[in-house]
Length: 372
Image 1: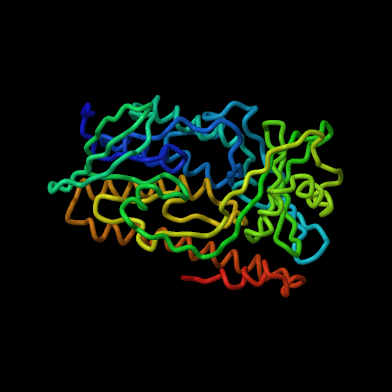
Image 2: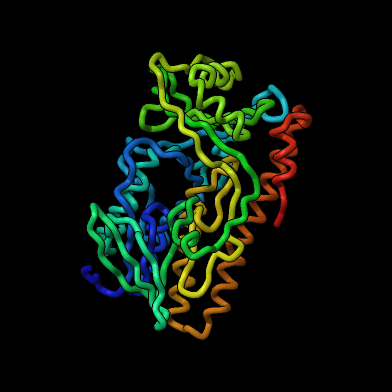
């Protein structure tokens, strides 16, 4: 087993949260590295970036989205359109938001570009998975990495879990997550019609859940249904019925059912969080710390925000170890404020749909709106 150099911080996961943390730590002069397996090819969920994210990109030394992505990998979102609580469509124009309506992204390209940016800035990036973790009496972690059958070791004072909803590192340390509901999603990416120039984000409520769609800069349209596990499972088993149900909602003025069979993926879309997002030598960011209901469209924003705030927490502790407890409390308070604000927003949204209160999905929405 070959020993790699010792780092002050090792980050497991090189998505937006992990890369944001790595960039902040590196800019502060800290020895940090990223560890992640090669990304899975194909489209990724979470393609909406709000205009306020520009402020976070600036903190990472990125002047704007155009400095990160090619023009073909993002386009502006013109409005949010919803048929929620009635069959009437309402529109919230991007012009009404002082920070703009945000963007629809090629999410895979966005993640890859952030990863490249971190590497170009000088952050070592290891294409491997965290295989084993142990903590020595010196309070250092021994992190064993595995790639293609080869095992290597890294020593570090701090670990950041940026592994998304699976929260791999935290789970390995037996840090239980609170699961606040059981919502799932069925999602597919279909070729957009040649006449489809729509740049809105569209959502519509139905008795069994709600639908979401947006045209992406990749030339495809994402179609996603959110509901209880049984309803999502039924869609996964019958793609024809999935697309027929989408078309029946009238969410688009034309049928979007693809001519060829398309894959539909099932995904966790529940709200979950770590009661404690930081503890001695370990801190969680992004979905590992707090996973959102997709209705919020805040996943990437929180990934960047928590990566920055988590890195600032560790920078503060490394500079002044006696302030560790206070730094932990401040970080937890920041995560809690985001959670509570998101729960208030969810409550306003879900309780504005009165038509389906007797339906199982909408009854579970009321039960899931716990402030915690």
